[in-house]
Length: 332
Image 1 (cartoon, one colour):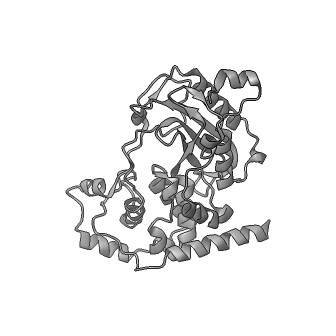
Image 2 (cartoon, one colour):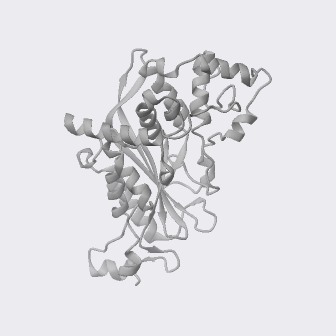
Image 3 (cartoon, one colour):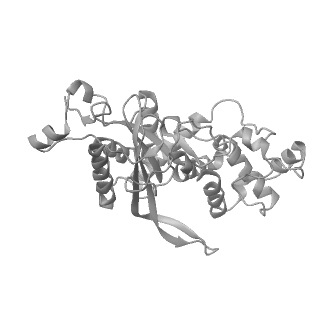
């Protein structure tokens, strides 16, 4: 076990080292004095370090409205999906967050240059990662080490781990459901692209190169066809709680997995309660199966690994167990 863990750590270090090649990381002077998601009462040096993380790990997301939490479920009343979309501040929004008492950029640069984020204790840095990353929603196909990994190479592995541990990652999966006929299909040619994570071959190889050190705590599966998203499934790891030296709770091993799902109007993209009984029934079946899945069947102990995501993608493909089911639910 120790030898395997060491091997995965070396894989991660090699990938991060390769990512770090190129011109030295430079911090832009447009970062805000206060991150919209962080407390203003923090000492200035700590605030600056958090601004660096927040400023360089906030991504513009597509206009596709989504539901962020697993609380929105297929059993819940209809609510527009974008009502649950978190607002991750972008660099433009960060610039707009300046206040009148913001110190000049030159003074802020001097403050950062005189402060070593890596010198903080691991527990303190972890709190920064949680605050900076936990509201980010990022397509899995875009996953790569955030720029702070280049700024602090000595703790790059730790930053990257905090990044994929606290952010929510979105993965697309095609299933064998036809929104026009409102039935499932079993045609081998049409099934060829179903039940797989929609990742390019290069991105797939990259994620696999990170080894088993890549474990996700929050995931969103966007389920549908090449043309539209028909359902969303949100997966969040609930951890056994322990306390740090300050008495604050910290996560340990996975205690259980919280899974929620919602159907999506194929025209508006908003969360809806559909009259389409087959799709709703199937999504509920998969959701319930994931909720009751024994922890020992999961590959990761601190989060889901790529193989866990592959398993979910395969489960989302409908397979009738009898001719009666095929006659009732399938067409072509």
